[in-house]
Length: 123
Length: 267
Image (cartoon, rainbow over all chains, first blue to last red; front, side, top):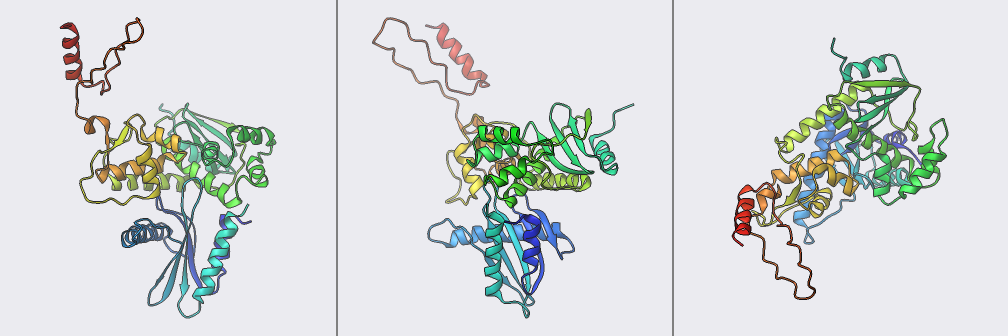
């Protein structure tokens, strides 16, 4: 069982991690960040990315309703991993991690992120 | 001399690395731990207790029990985690969310009368810390976010209801918006709906503004055409005269009331 701060340091220990941030996407707030120069700006951008993906994928799906498990966005330099965790009170909470393109293993990182999310919710 | 502003009082307490509670008028309380804000409660927003019971994780009686069992060292939050009601992460997230929600409404309430009680702690204990300046900054950011969603406070304090007809072919809703649409019944304001749904007041208010901006939510006056109440046939059974049913319409519709009075007088 881990708390929010431990969760972030666990995420940052994933091989190839460049920076990480926990975001509350309803208000667009940065809860905790590491390695980012302007966490408020990053939180706003990631909130917008998540919301746009949710709406776009909902429109593109025959069911018209979706639940995103995780998102992977690859740029020229890095992979962005975004994983929403459903919270009972007001959710979700987004764990966002940026990975070095060359030094990371995407499959491994994705798995580790899932494990860390489970640990955060484990009672 | 005017009393110092809440901002100045809190900044002073932060500089002194104070631990205790600052009661702000009748509206709420700010708890500080060594100069940092560890919890805020506000009469207008659901606290951790209400969020927990609304989520179905624990009964109101269960919360009371834990609260009574928590010792003078304020270990109520740890008890909740040990009993398996919430995980450590969930508790932190819940405290953090409730504190920001309460701060948003309390810190701008305009009340400058406040009283500090040295050493007083909240029964949950500290689980997340905010710098006083950071808390004010986040409140400003949230206010700007609200204005960006819809720059009008028209619906903030009034009962809301979904509009009867979409002006487009389809609509996309987030989960909180969907819950809000289902619960908005023309009797509850954003703050009432937050309590009813067990959601933070700020996110409910934001959802109200987003839905209003999309033309999906209105006050009742805008959605229902004033109409005369339907005649109710007199009851055949029983001799007691049945009481007339009050008309189901907006009481502020003066024209309707005048027409009704005229009709009654003509009887």
